[in-house]
Length: 140
Image (cartoon, rainbow, N blue to C red; front, side, top):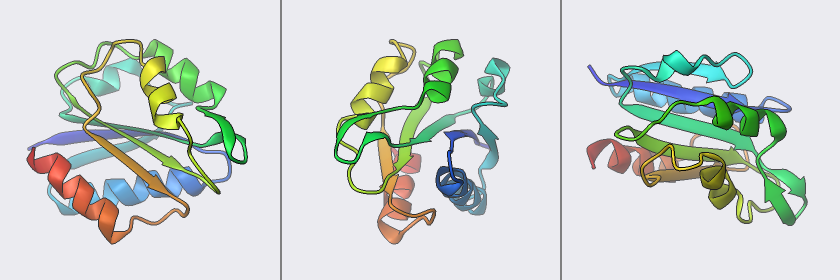
């Protein structure tokens, strides 16, 4: 059985619930899935997983200077090497995400293979497009 872990950093709950929606979708696909806040994350949790989803809310000024929040950056710094695992990044936002995904990748400091999937949502719900993107991610 394939395994996934979903790490999130949430300020008001939107990103947490979006991460849980992703987790429920993966479970429905038969993937053993754990959803965890970056504040409670343990580096050894990535051992034996095939898919790593990492998400945060879009921090910054409304349409400029978007970046991951500090707890997510600290979490990324402590992660072990994730090469060989399929990586997905996700975010929730109000107006725009700007260069957020690029900045998230930069904070992962060469610990990952290229990111295979990025998901974004203005709500805490997983829409049909995001489900299609996850399906493709799981098949590639």
